[in-house]
Image (cartoon, rainbow, N blue to C red; front, side, top):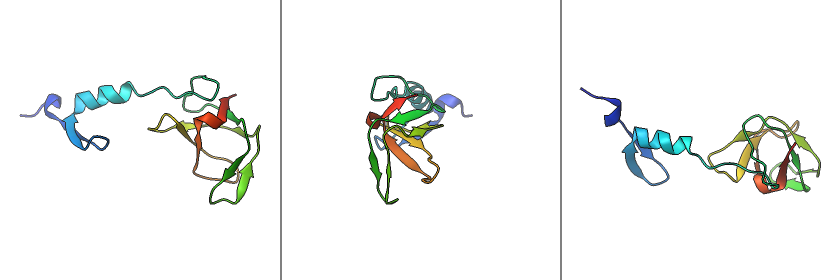
Amino acid sequence: MSTDDDAYVYDEATGEWRPAAEMAAASAARAEVRDASGNLLADGDAVVLIKDLKVKGAGQTLKQGTVIRSVRLTDDPEEIDCRHDSIKGLVLRTEFVRKR
């Protein structure tokens, strides 16, 4: 007979098998994601670029003041996943954005 307490999950960060309850608690206490001004970001927020950014692979530059809507948080508190009209799958560093 197995219970949830017996379940283990592989933690890719440490390379170890850890109790599922411990992993769930760790993901709930995920690091806060903050923009360049220190404002807390959440999924679905809109952000504004604070400087011109050259986009690798797209051959394009996003200008300062460009609004990016509906950002998604990633596992890395220094990066956000977003979409722009002409660039799909864009990942931005939080140091270059400000919450709108």
